[in-house]
Length: 486
Ligand code: GLN
Image: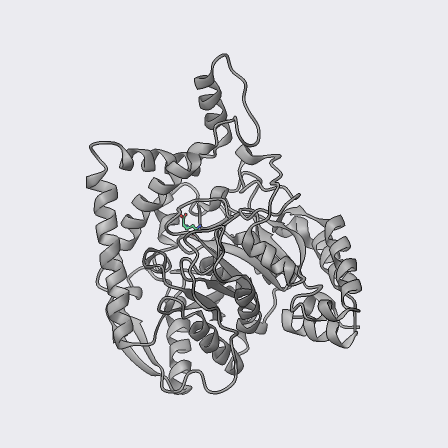
């Protein structure tokens, strides 16, 4: 019998529909794989074994009914980044300050997957409050890259990316505030979609940078990611910033690439980029040309300001969002003689160093007297960055570039150098500042057999275009089929 964990989401659906196996068998296979190699990768912070098996049995029962058979994800195992709430399961955000917190409600994105029949296998590791690019900032230990266990999986959705790359689950949810879906997808050799800001409800997503946060999907193929996307996207009355835009069912027929104009921004091929990353990305762009695209060099002139702008805006918003963790309302409390000391001692001992750094930067940037000079100025430059994209999309249909400047780096390599860590997201941050969608697909391997990611960026609400082009690329290449040996 085939190893059930080797199947993609679409293959699992086909097998379930044909009765070749049950959801219980699928979910058991996933859980066994987590049990046998989960300690090596540490992709999960919480494995929901009992509830997953129960959901699987329930799915098998539902499959005998007409209503059940309508559910597109019925019986499919998925994993959820631990910054999204799932009623009854722990939600730590990779932080000690939320240790023991069990949310009484489920994030809309997750609920839509559940309503479509998906089985939640567990919560995946993340940098604390999604701040980081390596998952090393998790208070519960680093996740390891399935391609090389001495290296990081990227971050902050490193647990979700590793869980898909390691074949624990065919798909997982992540979040992308500055690159946290695309960059780990790149470093783990899978497909990761950052949605348009407002496309997917943020209800139940623990806030980091509220004007930047997006929920995204990770899977092995663009087709699988498209399914997750279409199910979770769309207006939600519980999130006032969720957009009232029709959500397409993405059709993968026809010729997605022929006649497309694809822009290659010169600012994304900078000095310091790993030569093999540039080489593989350019080869992938050539392949899109071979498929009939017209390739044009373009300029996004304000790209160099994206990193400093992001590192004002994201910490500013984070410092405001994280004010709620005071030892009173959620999770653990460090007792003290008076209220102030409860705040100081709880926050001082439960937040990790990166989160503390962000709170300090954000509080400083927002303080009276500095607000205009930092936050106000950053917002103005953010508008210029957004306009760069708007101008580019008047010329081209989409943009192609590397996802990350280098392949998976060694655990510990950047941990004491915040700037080096921040630089991991130079190519992904601009899309968050502009609110546009992006996708990363595997486009080859470096000499250490580590995956390289091609990033495609599209206009607002054009996830369909990104997914169709990514799919077309995956029809003529087989990078996405390669699996790490664990
Ligand atoms: N690495 C970036 C940061 O640390 C982005 C993180 C994210 O997208 N959640 O802020």
